[in-house]
Length: 491
Image (cartoon, rainbow, N blue to C red; front, side, top):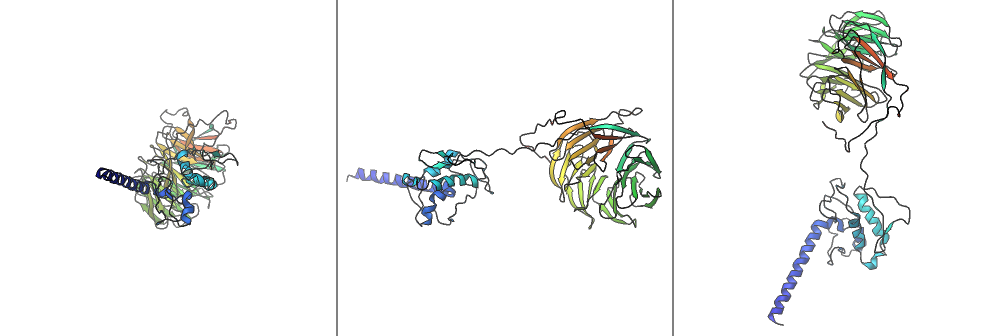
């Protein structure tokens, strides 16, 4: 053989070997996670070398692999770059149907008919393991490919749909109660739903008949604005606090003060009763919340940690048992037993003046000029923002139907669907005759025990009572809901 032919032969041989080596390396690095799929399962079970569907060469894939077909890691599918799996084996991008079925068509023609059912199932398994729903079809409706094998028709997964808000009837004003001579700063409804109590800047506490709106009783004793009232469901007691640093316990059988709780160093802005334990929690301008034993008047805990006025406090039976909101923009969840902070929430950017606990869910909401935020107990996990009420939010209230009410310093009141955060109604009641236009703030609001009436305490010295509009329907007041494609839950 001439020397030139021998050199040409060796050159071709080395080119072939290098190309073969290059393809083997490429197959192992890029396609090894899918080369052991069910189309090759029989060969592996017999202990023979696996057949390479992408190359005429043979090499063993059983080294370090289980016989079961599992897609793992973040390697790409054969459909090309950019298609991969996350660590949880969820697809970031769906491979095309043609590429997914290419594995089935790669079998030799002699074995195609024999393994038709096995091949079709494996294509569906590719998508099932990737987290993509398979289209359900009646028998016989599967697509036939050119090789005679049946393959299930596949469709893309639907985008997650935003839940539609529940329809709530609008609320309308039906009664205005006058009688106070100053701003009405707080109110509370008695557990029997017969009467409610209000506290005012005129230093008086008034008790009103809930059905008729008539004044039943006036209590005097505070020497400054009354900022908080609460009626006990466990005893015939009424508790009040005010800017005179005093916290009082009133016996409603004798209509007089029977206990004082001394300890606050400045104005007391809010109070709440624990639902299951005989303790009272108050908060104020001295940046603390204090836990009191109702009977002994002892200061059980002084909850310190806030760096500014503590504007609101709520108690619940579960853990954590006390939640406070402060002008230092934080919310703290306290362990009542230890008297220490369990969680500090710093998501708000402005003062947190109001908190409300959901009556059925283990959640709560906080109100601030930047946003209303919903949280999950017990660790204060953020749920969602309710943006749009761009004012100083003084009060929040929620009922069992999922109606959240926010009242603001400018007299506006927004009503929201709790689950979706949809703002379905906005109310701005006119100020009463004799009051300035600027005196339209809402300082407190609450539902009565039947949740059929909504009471608000306002800066025009009145209490307003709202109820649902019985004549409203979904046709007359439709849900004008236009969600974003993906609702971003911003912190």
